[in-house]
Image 1 (cartoon, rainbow, N blue to C red):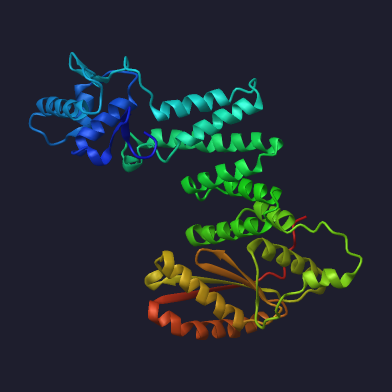
Image 2: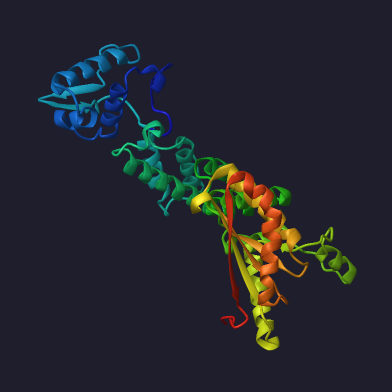
Length: 390
């Protein structure tokens, strides 16, 4: 039931591609999902038909067809579907197991804190191996499937988290990497899983892999949601992925690490969290110096203000970033604020001169913009009066 639907008996296996007719498959799936009770004719008819002239006979025909289909895959004389007095049910007297049931059972047993750590980890690993994707993944959008899918997905996410936390004090970092890499295939946007993976890579001394993982997550969140990794994850990346464990008495060594590899002209792009720190630093300084401090928000939209998605957005935002960079001075900083916005801080620029910056950016972006019916919108505010909250 987890991932692709299939029924196996010995060396024989029947899967979705072997079952002709979606109603046959849906009926089988429904009876297995509700194997702890009988299901009335009316319940199955409501599930499968809304336009049949004689749904009761249609259902009987469907059950017969399903039984004939399963004959070649089950031991002789075995009935998977039982019927009695206008109801149908899965035959619970058979020697059988359902992966979703086994998965749920293992997760609950592994949650017993009175068991040894090793035993709990082994049970969690067995459970996680059973989870091969969404509950009835080909039909996860059906109304009756959705709440069950949410339940098992939540149970899986919780099992990953609990198993990883048990593995940390055991020093099983390679196991954590393996578990998290599989979890990311199933739930690629879960930051907690990425965080555990990065921590485990650092513990294994794989700093390059950890850095690449953080960069991958950052790009993924930008492109899909226009957001950045959490401040906690960003701070962890800055403090642990590039650890500075050696003590240097020579300042030249430290300066070599601090200095840019290549000095470039134009504005300085940084991550949003870094932008926040610099912004607050300028606000602190400005409370003493008292000079104008323009903040400029640039929003990118399609023709008629509509949003645009995917590769078109990614390409346009990269082009806009290039235009912003070459239009600013070295002291200016900017960052990506959302999927379709950049925010700029222009210290020592009079508020009246911001229009010149806007014009430079618009002119450079114009050639690209005209080809794709894109529009830039600018919002400016002098933040010199803002005070940093303590």
